[in-house]
Image (tube, rainbow, N blue to C red; front, top):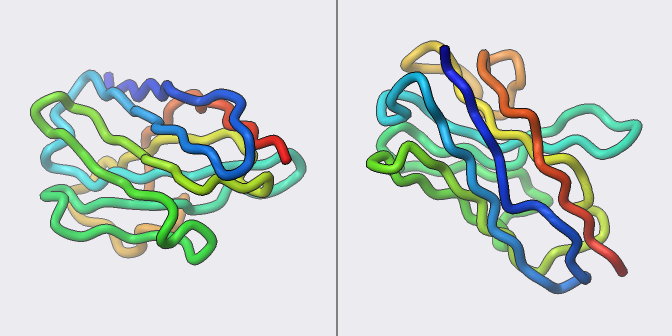
Length: 126
């Protein structure tokens, strides 16, 4: 059974930094894309960042481009989201996700992902 566990969330002031981690068990992540999504209260879950299985390509939402960096360590079965210059509008529950298929059509689409973590809260104060 594939399980994803996020960690690293917390409360930070605007302009600060946090690094989220997503540890996967039940299979090797090396064959699959990995992604981060977030969901603010009353909002739909939205795409944040994704990384291909080799790590050779990364994709970002426009709102986080240049501030967030997604990376992976396949040997540790872990994916990371480094967040800098945080803004109050980044406040949300952050989720890690991975598909069941080797290839997916659209990294930004929640429907492409079959396994999700429980989420970790990130709160940015102004």
